[in-house]
Image 1 (cartoon, one colour):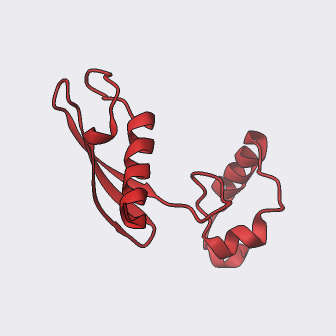
Image 2 (cartoon, one colour):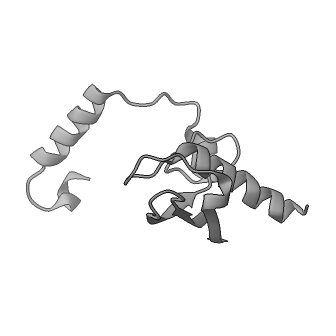
Length: 110
């Protein structure tokens, strides 16, 4: 098995374990997952439910190594900011309130 095939099989297993059918709630097996392609860190896969035949397309972003899943940072940003702690809900709410309080042209406030 080539490295390419191993990557596809690993991805298919992960998707099958993580996703259940939204229609009938059946669990998937790797054979239910078809990898359509990969480009610029984005995988495109199709999942077909063997029980009810529901089909869905998933777009999965591959994070660089040592990055937390779901991070919106690119690899360079991650290196720069990984030592900082995450903000909590209260801090996020304060930031949201401050943004909504801005009035007029943003250039004056920057």
